[in-house]
Image 1 (cartoon, rainbow, N blue to C red):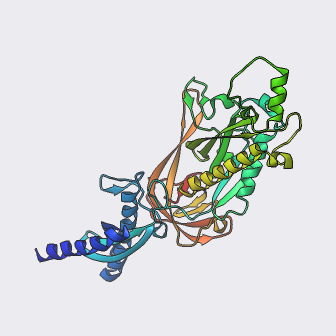
Image 2: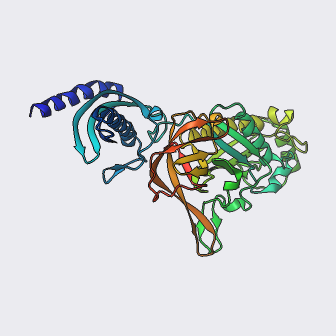
Image 3: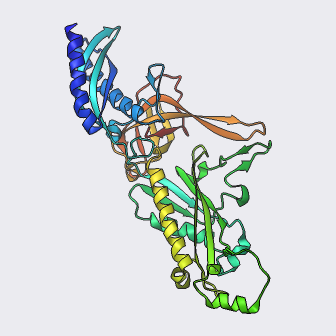
Length: 404
């Protein structure tokens, strides 16, 4: 009874400041094997295990995309440093069961929630490729000679991220991911079904693929079609403030996960501005284009596109491919240049290859609830040990690790 009262009082004391600081109060369990009857070391390890569970459980409560199922945290092996800081940890119960010492703790966790879904952002450097933005109606590019606009947009966005500390961006302006822009990002499979998945993306050796389609760059006529009149046409040409000089710009942005091909973000952007050049060529990088109101509006809109790409990818998990395994040691194709450090912990996902009705392969990723702890980090690769020797996990080359 006294223990319960003390525990209730402890919870109240934690909740008062937590409401002001937006901290999360959690209860978590941990365990550790007792070696050589050393209860002190086992208790220390069990508390550490419970503290990790508390930090992860706090993030699961905040992030709507994470959950606990059957008493097991779906994502149970994220690095504590990514989630937040533990304080006021109290052991409220402990017991021995077989060769293991179990503890139950209460703790306050301050979790960084800077992403739209309430989850903590990853500080790792993610690899991205930006491909071309094909024109839905290439004939619209004749006015001004904007036939390379799709490649120019790719160059512009890639240059924006050239010095970005958390994004390693690759320019693939000659690569068109959407040969049929009218239906992008939807693709028809051989069996007639529709999907937004991109096929055969792994060879790019990146984590995310940015692509899109330019839907409209046609002149805007708010008054609709009319019969030609020489005097009226001449007047409209001289009247630079006329709405008849307006030109549209509409584009779709798509972001795909390169490991699964899944579409994770889609957004449409639109603007318009005055285009006063008639027959003169003024490609995207020319001074004439930049001096037009239309050019200024398009470039301003692309700044917003770049900001949205940055925000979206900041809140997506860091992912790397497993390149080699040797018993409990695992190598991955990311290292110091991606922001990894010794001691970082990553979730291991098993990749399963399935085949559709037309024998086309597609991947499924399943969380093995196995943790990779890095202890050897080189510039472009790293290795570490997994916390399980259970053969049922069957970790193999081309499986992946995630930051959550």
